Amino acid sequence: MSRLPAIANPKRQPYPSDLSDSEWKILKPLLPRPKGFGHPVQVDYCIMANIFQIIC
Image 1 (cartoon, one colour):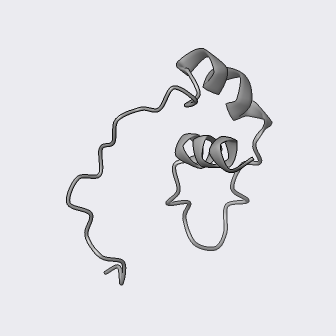
Image 2 (image 1 turned 120 degrees about the vertical axis):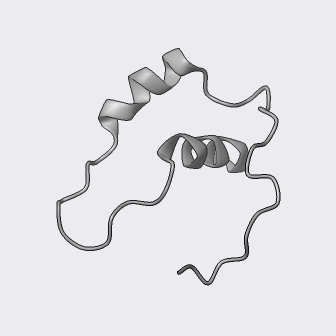
Image 3 (image 1 turned 180 degrees about the horizontal axis):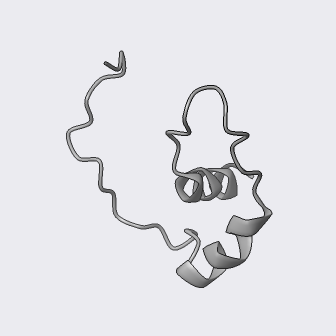
C-alpha cells in the first residue's frame, strides 16, 4: 500500500519538449539497469527524462 495520494488523472497532455519515441529508443539503452536486488523499479524513466529536460 502506498502512502502517496491517488492521482485523479495520471495521464497528462504531452509537452512539445517531451522525448519522442525515436529519441527514447536511443536514450533507453544508456540508462543503468536494476541490479536484481532491493525494491523493484516503480519509476517510468521516460517521464523522468522529460522532467530532467524541463528542469535543465
